[in-house]
Image 1: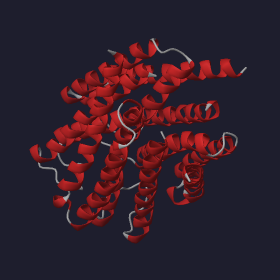
Image 2: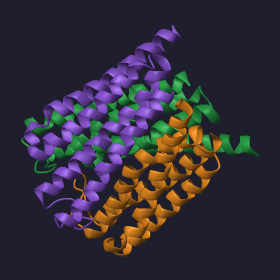
Image 3: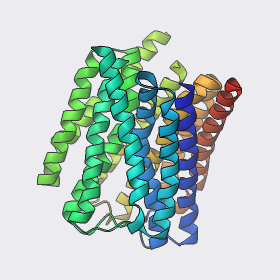
Image 4: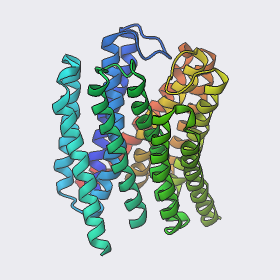
Length: 127
Length: 127
Length: 127
């Protein structure tokens, strides 16, 4: 349980940083709320944060489920893959959105393993 | 607890599928990141996934709270309503966004019952 | 645990209300799905809800982690700050998006204290 919470809190710190970068990007690239478009650089920062949120909605509950029904050790490796792949995704996206596939694929891979691992452990325990 | 986790993991699998469909839709309908607009078919796939995320942020914590403070049996029925209503919403939205009301209403109904049921059980236990 | 769940359920009720307001705003301001732009008043309602979702993805897990590893009393104060700051953010944003900083800053403050407090308690327990 501690391992899951540690990983989740670190992923949330990373996300808070990505979110603050969007807020500061509004001033830097002159994109006034409520608009979310109008400058390519701002749109990249915004989409990195949005995409990370879209993945966190899977990652957080799947991390806890994986720890409860599968393994509290392997969750550290999968959590590390998630967080590192988000840094990679951000770096790729800022350089050129076309190059973002590796970061995206690694994040999805971690999330799918977390879901399927937890589901496997859960169903095994139910039988 | 097992029932809540089972329902949540199945809803997450459905959401991962909706998310992958958006990713593939970018190639199919020629909408390059960071853009999220420009083709009506892509926008429909994107909004189905976004709307499902907007509902999952309620569904996941409310499902666990409902199991803890109200009922671990009824959660299966409400979870089934949630997941089925998301398939319905997707089918409706792809056909014509104007017809999406039933799927949307069923999802909201499941979520509101989960929140109010959990709140009722929680407050009853506190008194 | 009860305190965390109470706070989370109340924050979810507030969010459901913000979400329903977006749905009704589509009719009121004539913004048909899948579009999310085209009327400044609608865009404000939409961005208030979206921003609240972006913050809830941090608030919900951080609230539970804070209760487990730091304090089940202070979570009530931080939860109250979160919910009140979201009402403030909504009122500010509807009046003029440029005035939304206090509501936004208070929300971020509550979230950052929840994350760092939980992380501190967790790491202290691990050593």
